[in-house]
Length: 121
Image 1 (spheres, helix red, strand yellow):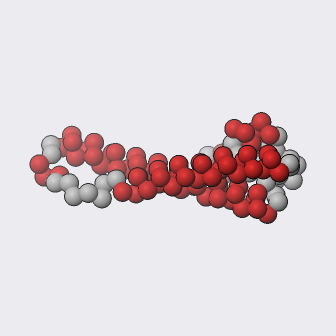
Image 2 (spheres, helix red, strand yellow):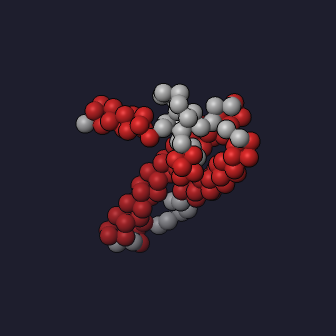
């Protein structure tokens, strides 16, 4: 891949990294404040608990995505960015433009998702 394209993807990934670090930080801080649940009614307590759980799960997703972004940046440094981890073929730039942290080409991504559904379902 050309150096200018790699620089373009690096810029996108660095920006995504910054956003995710910020989001993970927010979700980690949510709910750490001292709230007095004793003065809330039962509905408010349930809503607060649901919101905490939702943000915790959101944070987990953001952490997984952050890991993918870091891996993509490492691939740029290692010279393997844009290559499918499964078949070794180049990932089309249209896909990388949408998901610069993509690990697989479209065909292999479908296969990976099918395999995951078979093992979990």
